[in-house]
Amino acid sequence: MSVRPNGSQPRTPLTVALFGPPGSGKGTQATFLVEHLHIGRVSTGELFRHEVRRGTGLGLQAKQYIEHGELVPDAITLAMFRERLKKPDCADGVLLDGFPRTAAQAEALNGILQGLGRRMDRVIYIRVPQEVLISRLSGRLTCPTCGATYHPELAPPRRRGVCDRDGSELFQRDDDAPETALRRINVYKEQTVSVLDYYREQGLAAEVDGLGPVEEVHRRALASLSESVVG
Ligand code: AMP
Image (cartoon, rainbow, N blue to C red):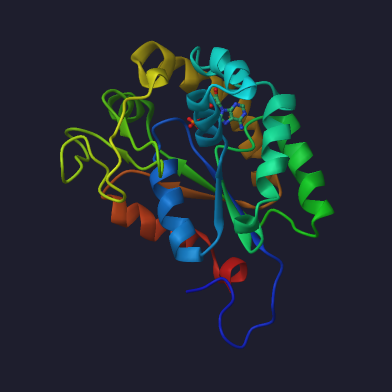
């Protein structure tokens, strides 16, 4: 399957958003989908972490919210997102991982996409029960380079502490600590679930069961991008 199969008309670049609470496997599915669909990936969480690591002004601003499990204010997030979307890897389509997360972000995104002659094509919601989220997040290991995630027991890397994909040294996110993780799950319920409902009302949301082997969830996520979306 490709975004533009042979013989079909060129279409506007694909825009797909991944929704799901922290620990639902968004990052893992995002990595798979962008490789499969040959589109760019924009993870606002990854962008913020990158800025925090570099110690930029934006990173310093974002850090205080991230470490408490709160959302970074919309104005800051949107300014960063707008710049990111201009990058060449987003020209042929984009997978949004962790954005939009508030009603204001969804509204702004509509305007941004409209300005580019694009629209939201599909929102994939990865559904996972809360008790599973907590166990997945505690001890989770993240790759600083590609964002892939592992777990010492549930999904161990081939070599301990090292990313299978690019050999980077894995780290534990501070905001995966139990108290902050719980706050992030609650923030998701308070501020992001209503954004998902907004896309549901437009018939754009597809629900995917996030439990089971990762390859199986990949298959479900791909299937949720119906023929009408990916051609
Ligand atoms: P994530 O990697 O998606 O779990 O995001 C990690 C943290 O980055 C979140 O808990 C927020 O503090 C911040 N963040 C990421 N994306 C957004 C967003 N769209 N709006 C506001 N804050 C965000």
